[in-house]
Amino acid sequence: MEKHIEKNGGTIWNQVYICVFCANILLFLGMQMVNTLVSKYADALGAAPTVVGVVSSLFALTALIFKVFSGPAIDAFNRKWILIAAILVIAISFAGFSLSVNVEMLFAFRLLQGCGQAFTATCCLAMAADALPAERFGVGIGTFTLAQAVCQAIGPTIGLSLAERFGYRAAFAVAACCSFCAVIAAACIRGTAREARRPFRISLGSIVAPEAIFPAVLLFLLQMTFCNINSFLVIYAEEQNVSNIGLFYTVYAVAMLFAPRMVGKLADRWGTTRAVIPAMLCFALSFWVISCSDSLPLFLLAAVISAFGYGAAQPAVQALGMKSVPESRRGSASSTSYIGQDLGNLVGPIVAGWLVERLGYGLMWRMMILPVLAAILLVILFRKKVVRIEDRFQQQVSENCC
Image (cartoon, rainbow, N blue to C red; front, side):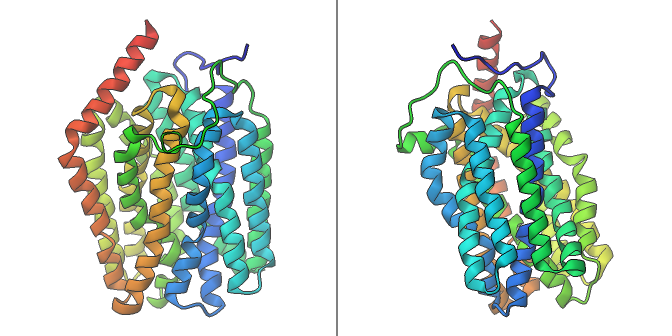
């Protein structure tokens, strides 16, 4: 008989959670280094803004395709070994970037990256959720996604510094090493087997959890906007003659030490709606500030606002998606959440690149506020749905305690 994950009472820091947290932060560190450098490298190779956007977003295409298999597999098989294999695929793709000498090679390895990424984020989130005690669920998910958010902040700074000092190939090689270290952390996970597993079956219900579609739509809109920071911010800063733009990500990282946990606690206490609407408004404001920025202090102000915007809203919405389903279906709920984010990663840079070519960078940043405003409107219109999701989750918690 297989065993449940031990959840160590009311603390989130059990062995499984710690190992998944470490694997996740190492993987995302390399990933965020690559995400910033790939677009800049494509630009250095002479690609047009639209092509830069395609290179930046291309991984999301294969990530979406392989979501057909990832959700059912994560709910059916041993998540530890799925995670190890997927991280290895990503590490190989990062090593491939270091060997790339043209845009076509970037295309190929970017597609390979998406194959692994279809499994990693979904698997990490599902494993972390399984390891959390119910009464600390919001804080646990907020802390877990803090790893991703901090890597989104410091990864580009590290990558840019390495590229400037040693070149793009060396920076991509370092990102690959981070991913191999993530494999080691994942290999240390123990006790992830479950007494009951869903059969492996590829169907719409095993890939997409209908209950989690609404949070996934919100994540799509938020990610469609946010991903353009990694895709175009460095290029835009250079056009504005602003140096040391890597400090944007450093300041964002410092602010992210406080934002997700704060909103996670507010969501656990007051509900998701009251927590995320102010955060989304901050996110929209940050893009307006970026569009007006012509000096480093303005960019740094936008970084702080964005951390309390996207950095706070995204974990709360992601936790809502995991709350919408019973524990046995968290693989498909996680898959649904990341389908939303992958679609945002796919569409956002392409739309932004098209806007840059026609309207310029300043108007592009302002136009990309519209998806965030749409997300705010949806939260207001469907606030009762959000309340029902949270009420059902609390009811499941009470039943499990009994």
